[in-house]
Image (tube, rainbow, N blue to C red; front, side, top):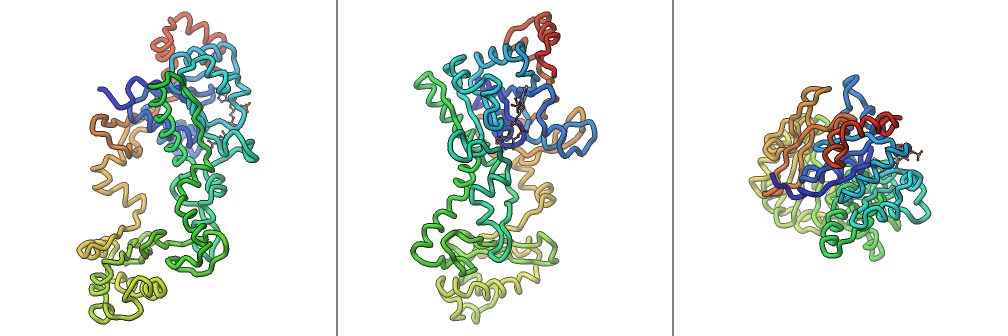
Amino acid sequence: MDKALSGIRILDMTHVQAGPTSSQLMAFLGADVIKVESPWGDATRKQLVDIPGADSLYFTMLNCNKRSITLNLKNDRGKEIFTKLIECCDVVMENFGPGVLDRLGFSWEQVQKINPRIIMASIKGFGTEGPYAAFKAYENVAQAMGGAMSTSGFPDGAPVVTGAQIGDSGTGVHLMAGILAAIIQRQRTGRGQYVECAMMDCVMNLARVKWRDHQRLDHGPLAEYSSQDFEDFTPRAGNDSGGGQLGNAIQCKPGGPNDYLYVVVQEHVWNALANRIGGEELLNDPRFVNIDVRRQNQGEMWELLTEFAGNYTKRELMEILNEIDVPCGPIMSTRDLANDDHVKLREMYVELDHPQRGKWYNLGCPMKLSDSPVEVKRSPMLGEHTDEVLSEVLDYGGDEIEDLKAAGAFTR
Ligand SMILES: CC(C)(COP(=O)(O)OP(=O)(O)OC[C@H]1O[C@@H](n2cnc3c(N)ncnc32)[C@H](O)[C@@H]1OP(=O)(O)O)[C@@H](O)C(=O)NCCC(=O)NCCS
């Protein structure tokens, strides 16, 4: 079936999380993603192993819908095959540490010489230039250096890493957008180009509204923050809404770790909300009659709401608040989500089978295209498609493949 990215062939050298999450999205949308692995494989295959002898979930959940070939890029015959693959691919993706590709002999300049139409897409911790360019990076390093950690957590606590992988997966999404833009430009110019995403830059982009607040501080305190203790940088805001409306996570019964409902007290729903939780008396309470005083007295407002919420589960409270049009959402644990009918209907947690691990689940594709439906297919085993790719894409015959094997092109 024709898919959005049918006909786009990707030479995917990515490893760990940031790159593979990006190429997996491309594969979901129909690109032919050929994952080129070293003979020892993407390190995540063997990280956080839950079933001995099977590829770990760390690997399987980031590498669906791809083909895997092994190539030893430190072997001359391995380099020869890789060069031929560059000639017939649209995109090379990679997220090696600084200088790795240059050392292998496949810098952007060299890749472009081999195939001027190719797009080369790289993730680096900090880009290829600047004082931080030589540093390696992982998720939490990017969150630390991109401003996410300093702005996450409670004002009186230590900086906190967010649960969403904005440094790795967030950068992967940016890279995909860059690649798609480069493909569109190539349709006009016939030329490929280099697309680079630095994890630090992408985290800064995702923390964009914290920069709004950083500059607003020049003109006085930020009235919506529950803590009014400011210096000259954006502080941690706990569960404050982060927007123009007040918001907070309200504890519900029975008081478990995720028994909370996140409630946004939009200005125009206040009357209905006040009436529902405290009747006429709260409706006319001077501490809360308008947004300005509600901001000043938000601590007391949250206490009243928490008192009311103590009678209900998060689901019950959500129903009550939805009836009066108050935006709210239960804090969903992974268990809640794994069993959620909406998630099932959206195909966001899909059951798969794997020869080594049996039944397992992967997250689905969050982009829903009406003419390019996604069928999630299990991740490949190491080198599963080496022979297939060599014969189908490069026209190698059986004897040639045997010669290459004997020359160490696929092994250590
Ligand atoms: C993630 C990261 C820290 C891992 O560091 P690392 O494990 O030391 O791996 P590197 O990417 O630096 O190096 C990979 C090595 O494998 C070798 N290698 C990779 N594929 C190979 C292949 N097919 N054949 C032979 N060798 C191969 C490389 O040549 C390199 O060896 P070298 O150090 O001798 O040059 C680093 O890759 C990085 O900073 N990447 C960019 C930022 C990023 O994406 N981080 C998020 C990861 S989720």
